[in-house]
Amino acid sequence: MSNLSHYFNTKSWSRRQVLTWGLTGLGITATAAILNSSFKTSSSVKIPPLEEQNEATNLNFNPMAILRDFDYGKVLQENGRTIRVFEVTANSSTLQLNSAISFISWNLNGRVPGPTLRAKAGERVRIVFHNEDGSSHSMHFHGTHPVEMDGVKPVRHGKTEIYEFEAEPYGVHPYHCHVAPVTRHISKGLYGLFIVDPPEGRPPADEMVMVMGGFDINNDQKNELYAFNGIPNYYRDHPIRIYQNQLVRLYLLNMIEFDPAVTFHIHANMFQVYRTGRTLTPNEESDVITMGTAERHILEFSYSYPGRYMFHPHQDAIAEMGCMGYFDVIAT
Ligand SMILES: [Cu+2]
Image: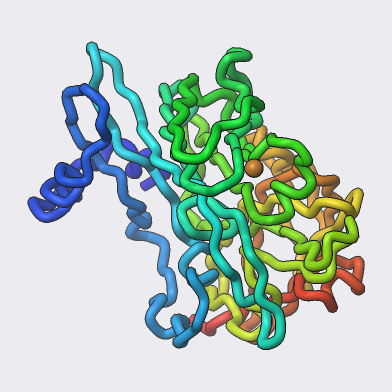
């Protein structure tokens, strides 16, 4: 089974889900035909149970949940067209970055990075963006779209903006706030990934998302802390469990401001690189890849031997300031 099952498998409807979604409402006049909108893993892929990894935290969100959380939106039929609708809300919240440092983030749907929005190439997507934060923000998507949908116009507190366009081209695209100063709006947490799947899907894999971010704690235009998925050193302290000999597909984005480029490196293994997610066959193989800000790739790998393996940027100073994690490879 490929990723297409996420879009076409409608068996997953449950009465409860339909009721829940129906009550949520979108405030949009449409004939709501809610198709599959939740993440379903291919039956041939095994994922270690999240419960075992979900230790009590005082965080607003759990980076372990963010890792494999894909937002497929809600599918509406409107005037004979299929539209995938996403709801995104900007707000502020305090992140406990470590035991000593709390940081007022600007975020989307209460998390840093924002939700991983996912659609299939050619689908119409509608992003309903509510700004509940005191400052003006916007959502600017990479990928192709008309200028009206480019998301550079500030959306004021209390306002809603709708961005609607065809999801093209397939690949891995960042989105981020584009209100000046953009460095500040991004480094405070207003960014995320927009995955556009190729029509034919990709082979089954344990799919995960990592977004690299930096935090400028003291407004000196430099980062004092860094993180994969919002919380410094989270995956160092809570290794990501994966299974031996099972393909991992990592959607990786660098959204670190102030540092021109970083690398990403995995230990004791090589990965296949699909640059910008724009290919179905790998462009190259390596164990370290360089990304400027907003560069992103799909990396695929599997581990042959059980054990704990580090991953981190090979700018070791950045790794030592929070961008550090482990894969915990479970014997099968
Ligand atoms: Cu902003």
